Image: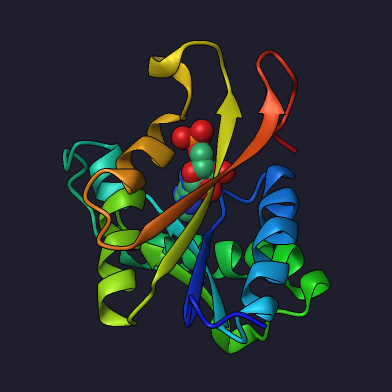
Length: 152
Ligand code: AMP
């Protein structure tokens, strides 16, 4: 048993890659006797449409939020992650993952990364964003190879 990490945060995009990322993160959390939280971020509707829609999007955003929560449960429940440790937050992935990490004393963030060639393509855009500006360790778990279908 090691005690290097106390709180491991796993960022999932809800594709099937999420299972591989969780399968790598969970033993690390167990070995460290650490808490494990899972986070999925949802793009704000107003942001997606440039704030140009002259209507209240709150109820649609709430429905999307509920849908994402149940999708996250489908991904995280089979790995025995308690519901209270499954988080859906609205915002940009890197910003919200950093915010959650600071507010909850996360000391290891685990993300997926696609094994593309060359240093510039080593990490996907979200994983690069998470790495930049992170105040704790970040583990990038290699997921689907280039050209491989990874989305559900
Ligand atoms: P990508 O930038 O699409 O290659 O995503 C790489 C990794 O970033 C994923 O495996 C997740 O760990 C993380 N990620 C991407 N999108 C999200 C999201 N909406 N919420 C949380 N994590 C995400």
